Figure 1 (cartoon, rainbow, N blue to C red):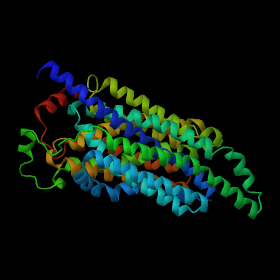
Figure 2: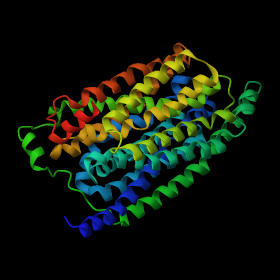
Figure 3: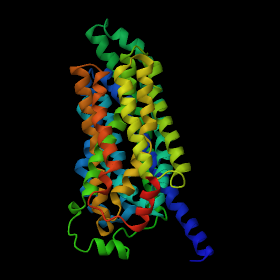
Figure 4: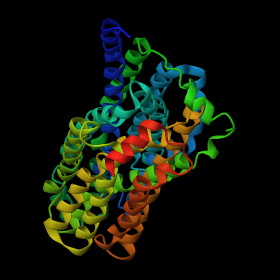
Length: 436
């Protein structure tokens, strides 16, 4: 291949990467609004911990139900139209927040979150395999790390922006609520609930504009069914995606990973408040967690694959997650809260590593495999809910015990799970020898 051809390909790939980066920004902004919505709706709708964490359940459970249909939709629409449709669905979900706020009906908020998650499921099903395939497989984690920066920059901004509006004077409001008469209290809670109306109207408009821009963009289609000669040969007797154990273990790993990532970002504000830290200060802690994730992504971009393999990065990340989980559980105050924030650093390189490891050698099964991996995002619905239940039954600190087995299974996948049932090619064998 000539140098001119290579340069042309790099230039032509710039626009798709920019477009996908913009989508990952949207993922991050919408997703990490939940960290503020949990304490906000807990106050506005008078919820306990378990009920408040239904925010994450409603949002992430949509991935379980919509992942497989999303793959089928993309087969009909293609990547570009599918992404545009996903943004439109998210806009509908955001719009539902308006009547939810006016009625202060928690069920409507949850419905809006479920629909937003449904749109995101379609977007994620398209964008993650797209960016994985859009270049050499050995640097896929590096490209996904770049997308992660777009995601977490948005995620860092989201809680600050929404928190400044919805949690303004929340500490004083919380104290005064206990001494209000029933009529005054109802009026005050209605005013608090109405604070989300303007932000979500803005979100609706932005999503619809982006949907139009994506629809009109030059985003090319990629043939995910294409297989090289080696992959086609190894998959010649395969008739189902269920015949790839390393993929199925990858789904479980993503399930647990998303659960612990959501716990780190979405529980820290409420947890800090239980440790005696005012909400006016605690509302910034999700942003700190995501900034630490950005640091981790920066390490990935610089070091992968030149100094650090995707597999090694995942091993180190999972081991750090176990260590920090124990620090959270056995300390208190700012030390414990800081350990929760540092989980952002531990989590950063897990997601970018799982995708290329789980999709390796899938060939014509890539689309359905991607749908299964997206289903794994439902871990964000189940694992944090388990944390909320443990927080009510035990206490918010000891509820973090749920992290330990999760990180241990992620560690297992990094060492052993990603190799089960796979035919390792020559290049990977050399890489493993170097790593060992």
